[in-house]
Image 1 (cartoon, rainbow, N blue to C red):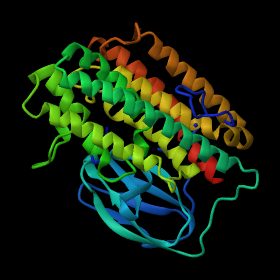
Image 2: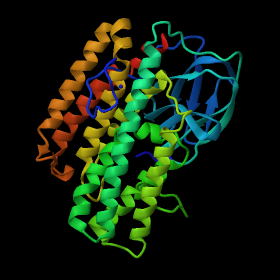
Image 3: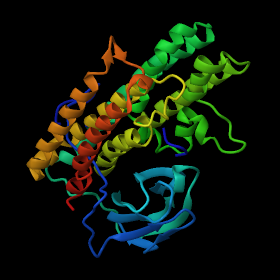
Image 4: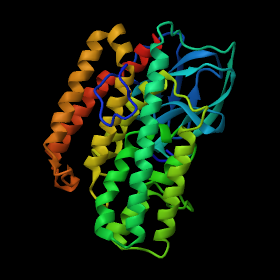
Length: 379
């Protein structure tokens, strides 16, 4: 989790899909039309206060000492695009589609916590949409939306099973169901992050709690199960988890729920960033050590997002499409050695050298997937 912080083939019922792409780059190819963002631990300086409808490219440089992230929000704090895990001294690119005139919010989040350092960004001009004469972009968006909805259905089902076990006091069964339910959330987490404060309610870690903030969601129950034992409010926290998952289902099943193709590419990269930020270190599931379930789910979700864009990538940059396919295969093979039964070994049994090899495979994949957003936007 973060702090407040998918071919032409049918994606609807696919859980694990073959590749394709999405992005932000550590070394981006900047142009004179790009908007520069200079972030520090206390500031977020943006070179422009306004732009035109269509695609905007932000070059985000982190001059601070903390890892940061950069968001573009529409009304209601709906994320139009984000780039995460920007380490000190790095510059990363975010390409975001802003097809409608209006006032948006830009936010730098030093330490990747809280609401961030915000400022308004005004977009003017006639409403636009990306050129899509072939219909490939619309097909990608429709396919990925079907994938998101299918994962949420599975999330609702497995979460209810998990909650039922918690409330029945069946600790062993609840522990077994915890990583299974989380799998469906971790595959689509960037979309959940689009809905305001929903992600923190579902997935906030204890280490990211802010003073006075109520701790709910999966990780609160994780601690109850693995560390403290059931607490007086454990059942209420479990019931709230079901309510918050239902809210997510309501949002992604709304008639006006749409996904811009450049956002799909961003989701693919964002899921890989999630691994680099918290899974590799073992910070995500610190009590249960079930990080490898989340790790595989993030990879599966990223692969599904890329698969939705695959025809576009193959047409515009076939070499990149082939490279991405190979990198996903390399990472899947690396992960396979840690499988045990229907799941994985616990992450505290994976030594430092093995973690470094996983990290190298993720970095190699990210370097390819980070180019997808530019390909989709036609940059």
